[in-house]
Image (cartoon, rainbow, N blue to C red; front, side, top):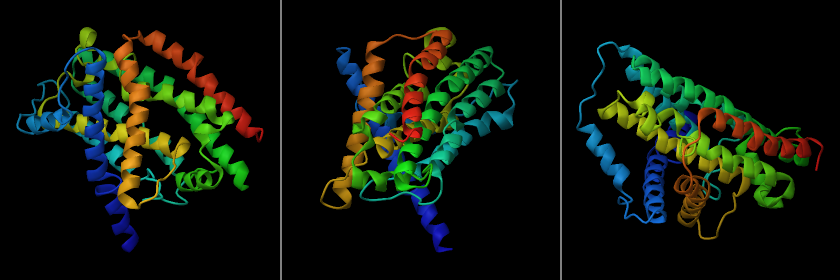
Length: 321
């Protein structure tokens, strides 16, 4: 019973739930503000994502007459719930070690596509032709960026596993503990290609330019999200905020899990700062400087650059370097 209560606390309060939602929305606001400044605009306040969500809760959820009502309403909850579970697996070094012995890297690999699957379900259930186009684009994008993600996860697992004598270490808690004694993997030359591949994976999974093809406003006017409004649309935004924390926190845990002295509060702030740094480097700067790929260009990009980089680290880790 106590284990269940602890797991619920981690899912609802920290590091998932309230903490992940707050951090995710703040990161979204920071992302928009910095992007605006880079483009010589004033930009919205950092708290704008909170304001948008409050506004959406006051609106009505309109459902198209020809939509499949059940799947239309279930889709945003699928993505939100999946990311709420994922957030509980993310270690906050110096504060929360994660869930030891869970094989959570493998669990995260299977759960991370849920927001994309939710978009596809919602887009197809809306009966909108723009949703159908977004469905096909989202599926293509997911197939492209999941390949380097799997290779990165396996490279980290093999690198730590060979060093600790377990073959492949799939526990993030063990990965963080290993780096506490040997140094961060982000500074290891063998893992540098995997780090670069992960940084290139982030904009694709976050759906930001140049990889915002499934929701391209100027082409298919938000695609799968076109028919959504009110709280249902709000849950999609909440799921996106949670996913931002999950993928950034996963990158921190795998490559830069260092701690600072001072206890809980400094380490929570240090974790948030590292997430913000990864976001600004891999998402904000890319968004501000690039246009939008075509779907064939995006697919080819992931096959030609992140995938070989991740495979290089995977091969080196498998050979024991």
